[in-house]
Length: 188
Image (cartoon, rainbow, N blue to C red; front, top):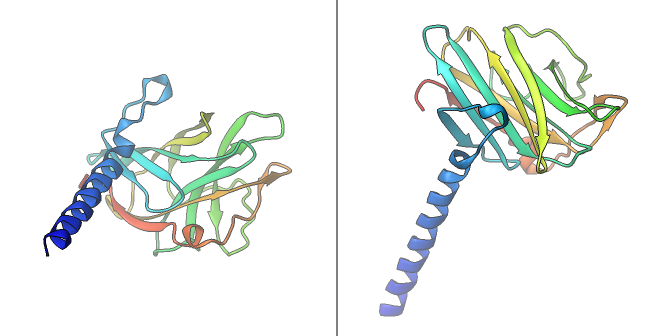
């Protein structure tokens, strides 16, 4: 009986340590150009994190979305203003272009086979930039005003290849298909 209690204690202790280390993962990040974000969350899938500063009076949010990625891959983060899920999302996509520079631009996800070409979004996006360092891609942007307030449906994604300066289809592993959620920028 004592062995069972000790085992339960150890399992509980390990779970607590894992939860604490997971919760601290995004808070220990430093960004280039001395950027600072007040809030962050480790996203459930694709080894990604989202950092932000929300300004309620302007209904704007400055974000940094980052994920591990190979130099030939791409990342994307977006908001779906009408419903949960990928279809209908308006995203920012980043990758190395043909001459090796990081680029980032807005695009809309209208189907399961989107063009991934630059496109104007239904909400304002400014201060867009991207960087690649230490096998991590990061997208920076200011989004808003947010029409539906601080709570948004958001999506994130990663793919392994770009061809002709166009991101190619991502994998269909569960982690790719489940990279959706809801976030409240104000409550963090």
